[in-house]
Image 1 (cartoon, rainbow, N blue to C red):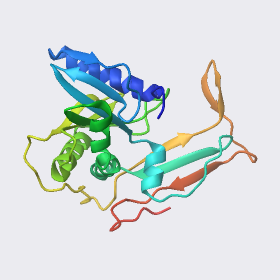
Image 2 (image 1 turned 135 degrees about the horizontal axis):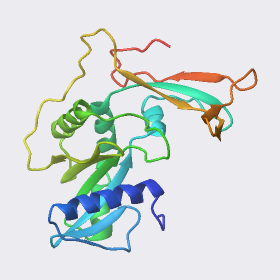
Image 3 (image 1 turned 90 degrees about the vertical axis):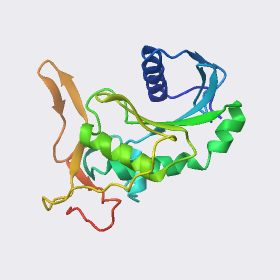
Length: 225
């Protein structure tokens, strides 16, 4: 097991900690734990094991079965489908089978899953509006889980409790594709130099922008490349 958390895990844990304290909860951390589970704390006297799960570019590529290897000295434009309900389903399924391990390792009474976007410097991989949060909430409620609470943390949308195990089950949500287009977003990974005028991208015959298109997890649809 790791002896320290990743930078992003620490940021996310700090944000959830502060959000809990701001609503009047007593949170006391057990500093011995950094992995499996990522965070152990007492919440108003109840011991909780919390595991973090990143929903970032590598995860989206893995879930889409994209085998493309990206080299650090190349420029890329990645187009990916916006499927927050299916991302949440994958994130929960990836960690669900380890709940017993988290509880046993930490001697906790319940386990939480804290999903989160990346917190790297610069632009977010994806924006998160109220519509995306509702899809995530409905997904978590439809699936259910051995985790007692599921959260999502985003640099812009903040800390969001998506689901608790006392909430009723709902139907699994679906995207609105009545416009005829599957919702997508694009992310640029480029080499460049920071100048007084801003970020100067290095693009030329030796360093063109390569395009990568991730296909939907909902296999009824396809994005044209």
